[in-house]
Image 1 (cartoon, rainbow, N blue to C red):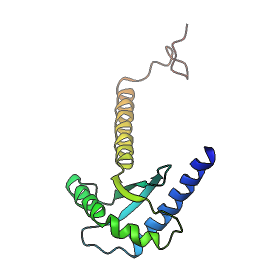
Image 2: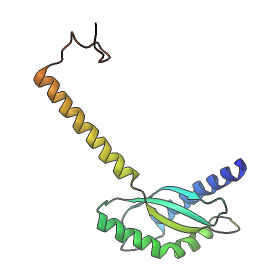
Image 3: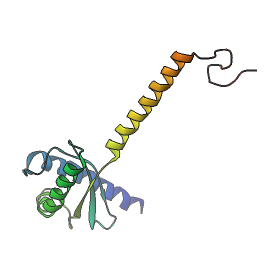
Image 4: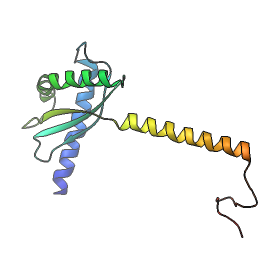
Length: 140
């Protein structure tokens, strides 16, 4: 079972490289901007591959437009990649928008905002040095 997992992972990595090169060099569609292939997960039976992508413009309407274009182009992309990757069966390509990058940026922004608010409170009210030690715990 572990051997099958490593094979699907290797195939996923190979598909990711080939898809990234194809997006950059071969696929010319006015609906697509800059597409980044973040990850490819191949099913154990090699029947399908989930392709997680992000776009330069993260506006919801633009993301939907570009994702719809990729879904429409999936059969053509599959044929193109099948000529480059030596597999008995080429998996069906299922494109999905990867929100993890956008969510990570939003989380970092929120953390930065909270830290700035805390620093502003410390500057305004000061820190009771006698009541707290360096770890933030109350002293006896």
